[in-house]
Image (tube, rainbow, N blue to C red):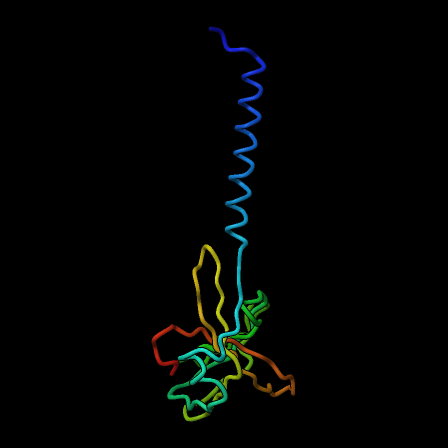
Length: 143
């Protein structure tokens, strides 16, 4: 029994369609992301609107690439003075200064999993009011 050209063309069409669907599924899994406000959930609600005293220095950094929720992020145990086109240190906190977070959010993606962030607000020396994010590990005290 010989294979007919029509059968081969039909097989190639089905294989091409399956390949396109597979590529689309892989692409969608890479771009999928979900953000959720978790400010009312434990243990994050304990950190919201409660002044937290820093035990060590900390820096708010601006990055030219948007992070998960903001261009600004809080980095603990660092008193840096970055001033490049990609990264700038915009504020340095000293020990015993306080930070207050007003929200908690989670970020979920297929290639990263779920990560948690506390969102704070502060005023820079320039008078600009900024929101910054702090990566928070679940089950670990934030400070």
